[in-house]
View 1: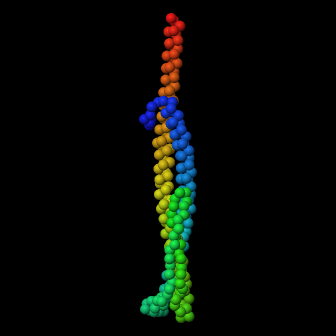
View 2: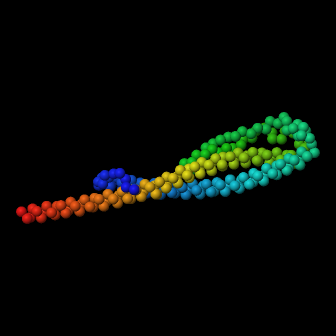
View 3: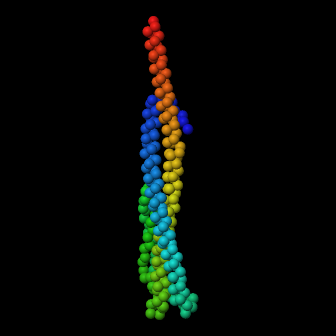
Length: 206
């Protein structure tokens, strides 16, 4: 589609500059889009791998916990878990990948993780709680990986729209308009030359 501009040499120069910038911008955005897609696929594969490990770890934790507490009552189990000073805190920092900012969470532990007497409990109980600690850390890690995937996917969508707008709208419109103005100016030049030649013939005839 032709742009609504006057077919002048000044306008032609301005459109050619815009065309060069549009082509450069299109190239850079396509490179960014490809980089974002690569990053998204790498992170997605890592997320799937870690989510599978988390699911397996959770099943193992449940099995160990049920086996460790099978011989004691629920009240005795609750008593074992009382009095602990183990705490978890979530620390956050921000990272940037290709202008996409996302949070990164880390688990900070404090206190004693096992507050019950180790001599009177099944070792599977210790193992199940150790698995719980790993599971919490994995859940925190997966939460920020999910957020990273969401933000990168959103940036991919925005970048793709900009690439398509340049590739299928702006650049073709500029090309068509530049071609139109070039042809128009050439036509005007031919008309001016023909007019000058005609005036020259008129002057000679007199």
